[in-house]
Structures are given as structure tokens and as C-alpha cells.
Image (cartoon, rainbow, N blue to C red; front, side):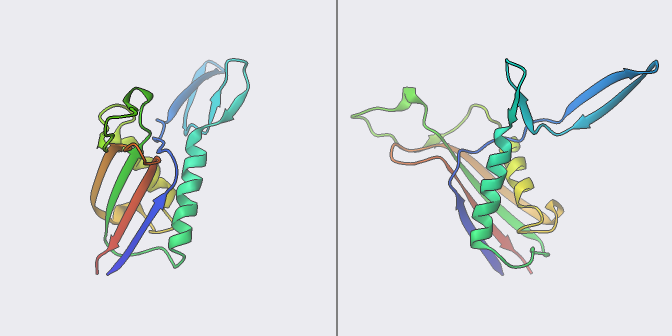
Length: 155
């Protein structure tokens, strides 16, 4: 059984929803769906969406731990997302343990962005994943935001 475990030292970013764009061309509506890769600023300029940097960081962390061919068997994946601690929850004298994170971003969108980044690097296709466990936490007082990825290949 192959086991891969690594930590991504980054603030988790959720996968943005695809956007539909429609245009009138010669009396007909032409529409297409595209993935969001840039964010339009108030001044009209565009900057890269944070998802690009997040996925690159996930791929880099995975490549440091696993450099063989993508796994081909059935997989079990466990993801632990540790989100930044809100300023209102930082205290000088009280304990600051890890706590469940129950606000946005949604866990399913965090999962999607992380799994998309790993496809083709640690496994061939998402369909190989037959069991998935994910949890979302607020960082403890001495903890930085990160993602722990654990992958098991079953034979």
C-alpha cells in the first residue's frame, strides 16, 4: 500500500464557480462557460485569481514529497484545512485552541481546488478516489494556515 503525506504551507483557497458568458452575434446568442483565472479590478485592470497561486503551491508541495508516476489504483484521501484565525479570536491571556471552521469558504469548494491541483501529479484521475474525508479548522494561536494532504493507494 502506497502512502503519501505532505503539508501545503498556504491559506486554503476555494475553487471559484465557472462563469457563463453570452453575446449576441448576428441575431443569435453565443454562450460559453469558462473557468475564473483573473479578477477584474475597480480600475478595469485584471489580476490573477488567488486560486492560481494556491494550486501552484499545492503542486509544489506534492512534488517535493512524491516524484514517481501518478498512482493508478483506488485511493483514499484525507484533507485537513487549517484556516487563518480571525482577529476577533486572538487573545493575549486566553487559550486559543483549534476550533471547527463553520463559515465560508465551503468545504466542498476547498476540496475541489485541492484535488484539481493534484490530478495528473499524484493520481491519473479524480475517479480513482473512492473514499474522501475532509475537515476545516480555525488555526490555534501558534499555528499558521495550511493544508495537510494524506493519500493512500489500495491494491
